[in-house]
Image 1: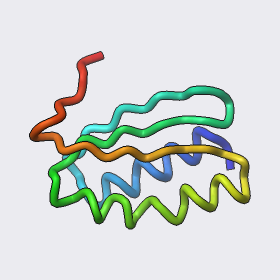
Image 2 (image 1 turned 90 degrees about the vertical axis):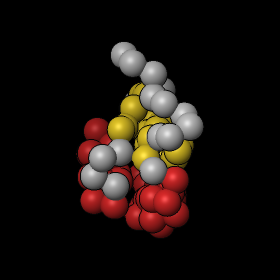
Image 3 (image 1 turned 90 degrees about the horizontal axis):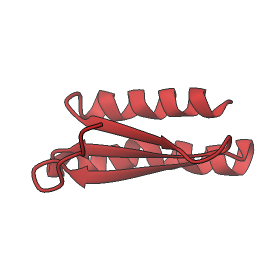
Length: 81
């Protein structure tokens, strides 16, 4: 799996759980990225559950380090780009 495919897959998993989540993606290198998900606080556990296993698999099997960081959109507004 490529980094772009991993980001797309994880982004879709997040959107499946929290359709109104705002995602900010930061690519750090060809093998590393961070996805910041700004979502309602009550969606945090569901987002973690939907992404935790796949992020571990990506790291151990594909050598891709994609972090999913969840923020409460009510208290941590995403910065405008």
